Image (cartoon, rainbow, N blue to C red):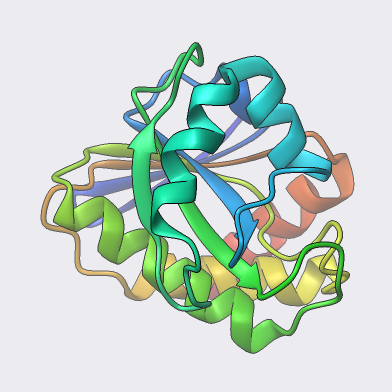
Length: 174
């Protein structure tokens, strides 16, 4: 695990399973229709329970650049922040959408007074954004963030290549 202190906010990077993170909220890189049918979304739904999908469906459609917070069902986290990186499921996305989703995650976390969140590689799976570009964009936004309630952000992903890109970006930008 790699740690960095940004003012009063800790940024940690680790390889692992985001559904096992014991934080206030994990981030679900969603589509605007919250279908939760594939990739990490499917894993979150399967491990956390169908109630997550039922709850988030009340907010559909959620435009890219917005995020909503729901309960986390049976997961270790208390909440899930659903942040669309694309309008429809299973389509490539853009770095602009990754940027908008990351900013929406931080806004949502602060609005809900969360102190810890776990963020995966937004847009790097189905969205096909190159890992290096996504990691640098996400890390840059985190370093620019002025936290109010957030004390800890964990960048967590199962992909070792992405973890390396997060670490490289944090060393480069800090």
